[in-house]
Length: 274
Image (cartoon, rainbow, N blue to C red; front, side):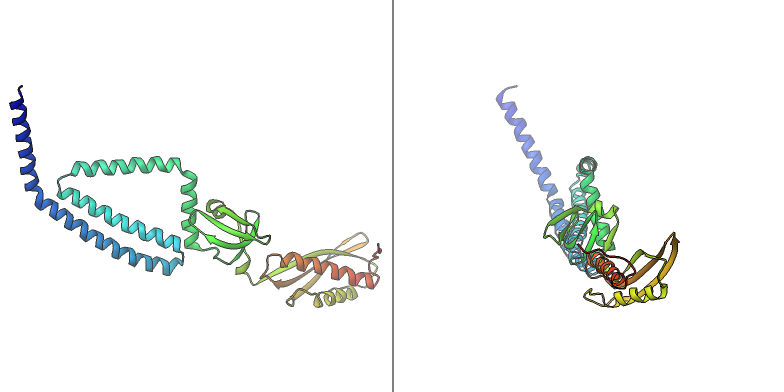
């Protein structure tokens, strides 16, 4: 083939493309209108979904996620319709297949990230704790500082920032001290069987009534529960304010000291000074 034949073929090809382009102009205009309409709808739906989800969950991260997902879904629908108008059905099928394969590959590659992400979504819905709550989980006691979809940050009493993946929090027990206004302290103790039990009980109750725990304790109960040779076993319990995570340990510590001091002063037990 000579140069003239090549030039003729190119001219005919360009003329064919020009004819096709002119014929497709209405389709291009319609596709652009469809995308503009769906873009406006997606923007409007995003605002509506943001308000609804935030009203329910009170979580910025979860609200942003749902609003973006809905917006993206509407834009994808609009894109598919626009491609169909342009007679690009095969392109639509290829895009769907590609998205599916990419999604499957990413799911396998980021299993832990996906698990943390899904756990964060469920936690945002159930809300076992909120920012500012004092929580114990995974061996950490601290105040909730940040709640994200992947992880949650706690600030311990030592001032340390501990970041725990949401998957670990979701699968492990959670103690939310801020949700319980009171907590019960129970102590198992012994006294010699040679002393008046009613008198010993009055000493225990008096010692606990004067216990310095910041806030008064309540509902003191004491029961003798068994005889162990020369000792009598008893259980004493009481309610304390549960605002502080360490309040339980401090109250139990002070209660033991107060009871043993009262017993020592009355000679029920012998306390040897150092």
